[in-house]
Length: 473
Image (cartoon, rainbow, N blue to C red; front, side, top):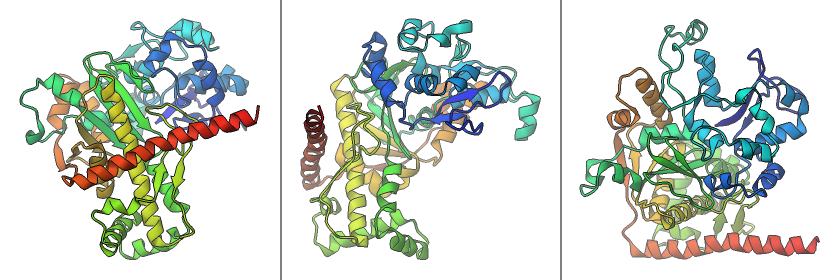
């Protein structure tokens, strides 16, 4: 997801780079340059912050915009519109500047009529309100609402489609994944004793890619420390959305693998067998478990523990300064060691998901089922470890590209092929495989023990940071 597309008065890109390169007109979500601005915004203790778990993240719009204002004054003065990528794409397609509630809930906080002008002025961005807040948008509609008169002649020609083809208001990409998977429930998993509106609130969607977004909805407004939201109708109309996440998951696995001495050799072996390096490591781990007579595969990692906060912790401790930890390293540089480190990293990510689920349930949610989509959902080991560690069954959808399916749902609603978003979800979502937690009590006991270590790694880090801060002052 891209945050903050900078657009000039004539629709041309405005650079947000130091060297003024006009091709650099976006700030991506994972950019953490605005840490100082984030801390200053959070120091105001505004009531707005309750909608962000008590503090904003450097991954959000406000700190990024403040960074640009303070560091790229020329850019700031030139920008005619600031847009999230989804809003820019629909504007580019239709000429309609109307913004999506999905994106704007991240800017609007609790004010149902729009932005909180006091908050933006307080943090030094009050000038965004000049000209009836035109720079950040004032017209907002629900996702899937038809925009303008559909595709303009220019955009239709560029896309090879018909002028006037309906275009639905956009969603944040992960939220589109939520639409594409949240109703993918097998009949056997449906709860006969629950009304439909209650049953959906027991499900958490994991959109697993470079990062992972964890999304759950509720009919009631639930404020949860360290967790984004609640945002009303930001994903499913008339439901409050709670959004959690891990800033590096697939990216972390890539980092661990690519920076290991054995990676080139394993990559060549995988290519010779026409498989990915991850599929090969899954096979290696099975062989290692057999060779070492392990009671179950997960036990291979008993001496290796990973805190996966290599790009900070988005949820639930909301600490962008948190660092990754690997405990249990040796001088081993073999392929087997890389496979073991890969397993421990998957488990660390899954313990993070368990922490998120437990934290949300402790604050009013009732999550008991996970639905997973995205690239990592295709990794059987990744999904099985998540099921074993969280204790939740994981539903994998039949459709492989659920973010695209969510976008198609918006298009279908805009074209009036469905009565609404929820009806389209029920018609187009379909369940695939169900992955259940291991029934072996030894597996649960093992992961409960490792989860305690996982939690302690962050607490130890806080202690270390405090010790060093005292030493430097």
